[in-house]
Structure formats: C-alpha cells, structure tokens
Length: 271
Image 1 (cartoon, rainbow, N blue to C red):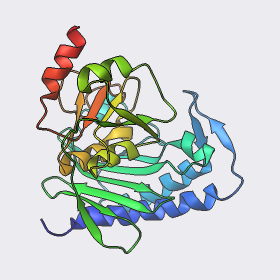
Image 2 (image 1 turned 90 degrees about the vertical axis):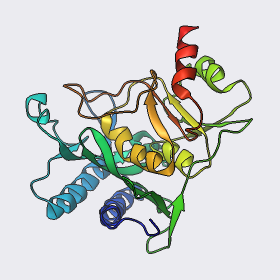
Image 3 (image 1 turned 180 degrees about the horizontal axis):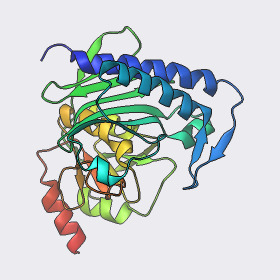
Image 4 (image 1 turned 45 degrees about the vertical axis):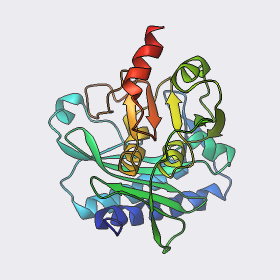
C-alpha cells in the first residue's frame, strides 16, 4: 500500500490530541501520586485518558475500551470480547516524571487476540508511528508532515539492543546466547524501543520482567507491520486478552525475521 491507512491516521489524530493534553501538564509543576502497584500516576495520565476515551467512543460507541487508567473489567466480561481498543494513555510515566521525553501514547485495536491497528505517539518529539494489519507501518515526523513507510533491517554483526531505561535487569547472559557478545545497548523509555526496531535503527529488545498488555499491543502492531515480531520466550507471537491477568509473559522484540528466533530461544533456555 502506498499511502498510510485511513483509520490509523484517524486514531493518530486522537493520539496527537492526547499528546497536547499531556504536554500542557508536562511543562507545568505537576504532582505525582502512587498507584497500588507503586507505579506513578500524574494528571497527564488522566487528561490523556479522557481525550482518548472521548475520541474512540465518538468513532464507535459500542466497541469496548480497555485502558491502564480505567478500572479493568472482569474476565467474565472480557472473555467474550473479540474486538476492542487497548490503550495506555501515557506509557512511561517514570520517564515523564524525569522529564526526559521518553514517553508515549499507545492505542491498539485488538481483533481475535491480535493487534490489527497500532498507534504510538512520542509527544515531546512529535513522532507518530501508525500501522494496520496488511497495510504496513508508517512514521510521521511532525504533525501535518509527510508519512514515511518504515521497515526493519537485517540483523548485523554488531547488533543494537534497545533496553529499558527504568527497568534494567540481568539479561546480558540470555542476550549473549541469542546474538553473541558484540552488541551495543541503547537505553530508551516506553514503547519507543519497539519503534526503534521498526524503523530499522535497532535490532532487538529483550524484556525479562513484568509488563502489561497495554504496554506492548500498539507497538507490536507497528513492529509486525514493519517486518518484525514480538515473541514470548518459546518463540510464539504475543496474543492478548488471554485470561484474568493482564500481565504479559517475558518477551523479545526482533526486527529480522529471517533469523530462527524460536530455535535460538530454545537452545539458549536449555543451556
């Protein structure tokens, strides 16, 4: 497809409106609350939530919306969903609080447990990533700018690994088994790590530790449509709305699908 998909661009407009609400608070003296899981919460999370819920509801008031900042509906109700929105109004609140700019707005459309549309906005830089199933992944550098088709790159001799800035961990051993010792680690916040791979500027992101479904879905769609994948540590693609828990298994995001990642993972984990 030679042009960016229409619905994804519409959702991108909603993300940009949420980003504007976030930035109005980002540039002020904001307070930080702590949620039950000890993660931070700011007025920006809630402001973005309101913008996104209003925007999505205006498109289709009957389509369910699951969001980090809304009370999660019970599995007894969610289990019947085949198609719904999955939203993180502000992914990377820790980076927001640090004012390093590495936070995003994530909006995904899930259909039969797979992300079929994904939108990721970096409000500070204005970079907007969108994707739709079978229609490619696209980047708009700034509002009203041209859309650029993006693609992943082949795995090189010295891979670039996108790593979490706030959730570092002991993953070097597994990385070495998967891609060798000669790699460079670039710390980056939020779902921007997936987008770096999708645009061919990094190769791998390994996450050992907890994430939630809204953290990964939108960026997974972008990476999938750019030619990569998000795989659990058995090498299987991520799926959503799997059960009562909204936590993800540990995973690896990769750009080069010519590599047999499932075999590499199996060999590494058996060692």
